[in-house]
Length: 96
Image 1 (tube, helix red, strand yellow):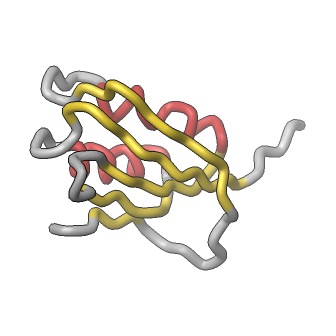
Image 2: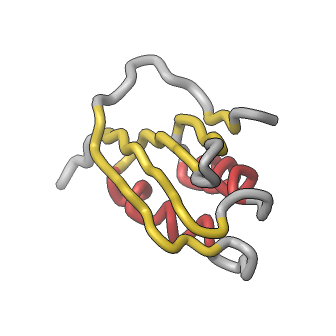
Image 3: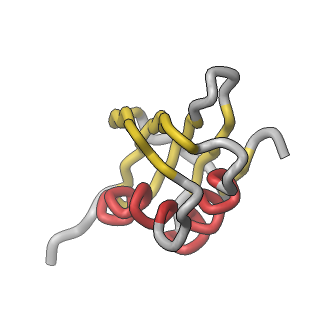
């Protein structure tokens, strides 16, 4: 049996990503896939996010956030693997 490991990713989303429910949908996506982390609007109009969980769930995050929304448009996304945080519980949308 192939055991999956916990990963953490840093995301930066550009495009039509503020004022369109992006943070709310990120929170719902985290709950759906059992992920932890945070999401935050940045002053330049982009959105920063860190999520932690199983790699296959993290792979589905951008598509799941956009699914069913004509308002969210990710024009560009930067992603990188970062160090896992021990004892992180839950997901928060900063700035609410």
